[in-house]
Length: 93
Length: 428
Image (cartoon, rainbow over all chains, first blue to last red; front, side):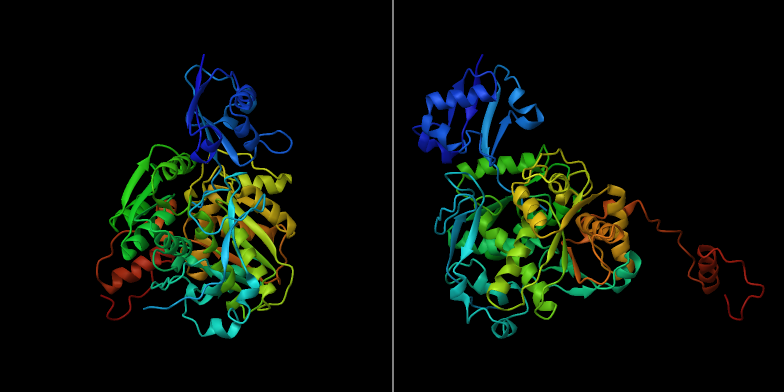
């Protein structure tokens, strides 16, 4: 089983310019551990002092915010596309 | 018309880690990914940003240019903003308020919403950074304003909207010749896509990589309120919340005015208004949270339908700091709010204004705001753009023959009065 992970350009300085990579992580905590192993500098950047994912990063699975899917308990499906995106304020109206 | 601007020294700063970045198109802190804020050397504005200097300026937002992030050499030509602040005596009577004002951005120039303010600042910076194409994700008002102001400046515009947007807002974007792309999803989907596009394309996205500058335009609502009240601050402000930016920027404006001595310092309570069908910030305030639980929007107030507002945590925190509160109202109450404001003050607002009016009424009803406190309710958009919301509540009535007797009979029918005993002379 593998999922495809996509990163914003701002993160690629920690990944030798790679915007995408595959992971065999089964859920979000496992993916964060995988990132710690593979791209330690990225792992440091996306977590706060307490080791938690920074609150300004949103995780999407396919087109859905992972928080709507159960957050850390969501079990990744084979072929899922995971995106890490900075949480840009709307400004919609 | 043409005015030249003097701007104070300013630059981008991360709200979280405090790092500074000069001036560049940047959507978030590259390190901690938090939203960025424009900060000013306020002391350099002393002697420039004074009541007298402002009074000599044009009757639009450019009178506040020294505290707006405008690139050197920028010469604005559109008279944006300086909308009426009207005393709402009739609405006040209905909802139990004796000192209520409405800030009426339903008549903001050029596209009838407060978004004209933020877009004019964003496009000034788009030009300054050399972008040829500008874009935005929008639920309508922003799209209208970007399209209109971009064509005036000779910039290409590409606007992304949720596919279920009101027809009037789509038409009001296309008419200016902007490229409009409907996205099969809600605003949060559109916004996310725009973040990805801004990452790949060399475009100036007003609410992504130009966002810190764009958001500063909202401060002009605060400057105008203070100036129009005779350079004093209100006791309370009621503000609609989508991304959570406007409410914070009004406070920032008030704080700057206090710092520079244009108004006396006093506590101002900020009240946020949302639709119950999309109320992540009001829920955070009510539950005392310092984070936002995202929601899937389901409300007729589409212009406020951001389920995952990134400025939400900061807005919720700020509201609580000021001793204010946040409320949310149902779609039925939103329509009533639109009708109440129109019937009492002659102001036809869109659904977001219905939210603000209904929340204002509730705050008085619940005793959160006392009748005599000076309170400003901020109306941000025009009802002509969301006529669908109220269309079903009115009937045109039958056509009456062009005769006085028929007209007279028709009025009696409407007023449910009996037929007159005698027909008056010349009645036919």
